[in-house]
Length: 398
Image (cartoon, rainbow, N blue to C red):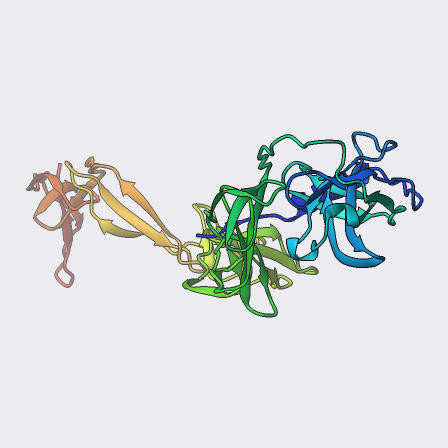
C-alpha cells in the first residue's frame, strides 16, 4: 500500500537552508593553498589549507602534475587536501615534477563529513606552485583510514576513506514505495523509496497506478459514489441511488409567491432543492363539527362556512321501560349525522279512551291501563216518542 507524501515540507526546508547560508562572493585568487608537496606515501600529493580560510569555509581543490611545462594529470577534490596521481604518469624522480594546486570556495547543504550537496561555486583562485623539492616536510606518518559518512550509487552504499579504501559496502536496504504524486499525463504513479541504511532515494516515475479511494462521497442529482483521490476514477461498487429523508419546507408558498423545500440524502448528504408553485386554493370535500360545516384548503383557508340544516329526527331504536332508545337526523348540506339517546320509557297514560263497550287509559307507547266495561247510569229520555216520530234516550258511564 502506497503512503502519501508531501514534497512541500522538503522544498521549504531546503529553501530555508539556502536562505541562511552565506551569500558573499569572493574575488579570484583570495584563497591560495599552501605548500603543495609529495606526502611520502605512494603517489599522494598533499597541501595545506589557505591561511586566510576560516574553519567554516569549505573549498574545492584542483591539483595538477606537470613535467617540463606539460600537464600530465589533473585531479579535483572537495574539502580533503590530498590526491593520488597515476603511477604510469610518474616515470622520473618525483623531484623532477612541478605540483600545482588552486582553490575555490563552495557552498553546501548537508553534512560536510558525510552526505552533502554543493549548490554554488566561486571562481578559481591563483595556483600555488610546489615540487622539485624531493618531498615535503619529512616523513608522513602511516595512513589511518577515516571512512566518514555514507556514499552511494543506484544499487549499493559504502563508506570510503580519502585513500580510496571502502568499508561496509552492501546493496541498498529499501523501505516501502511512497507515492509522491499521480502523473495525469502518463497515468502512472510517481513514487520514491529510501534506503533504510544510507538514505539514498530511488524514484520510479512509471509505477502502475493504485487507486486511493477516500471516505468522502461524490454525488450527482440522482446517485452518489466514491472516486480515486488522484485519477478521479469512479469505484463502481459504491455507485447507488440517493436515499432521501422527508421533504422539509424552507419557505411556504403564498397565493402570490412561490415557496421552496429541500431534502437530504442520509448517506452522502447531497441536498436536493425544489420550488413549490404559487398556491392555488383547493377546498375539497365538506369538513364539519357538531354545529357547523365548511370546505377547507390544505393551507388552512376556509369557505362556505355555515350552521347545519337538519332533517327531521328518525328513531333508530325505540326505548323500552328497561332500555334506552336512539334517534338521528342528518344535515341536508354536508350529511353530518347527529345522534341522540332516547331515555328509558316511563308510561304516561293521560285521559280516558273509550269505545262502545269499554273504557281505558293509554300511553303514547300504546300500553293501556284501567281497561273495563262501561258502568252506566240509568237511561235519561232526551226526546219522547210520538205516534209519528221516534224518541231518544241516553245513559253515561259513571
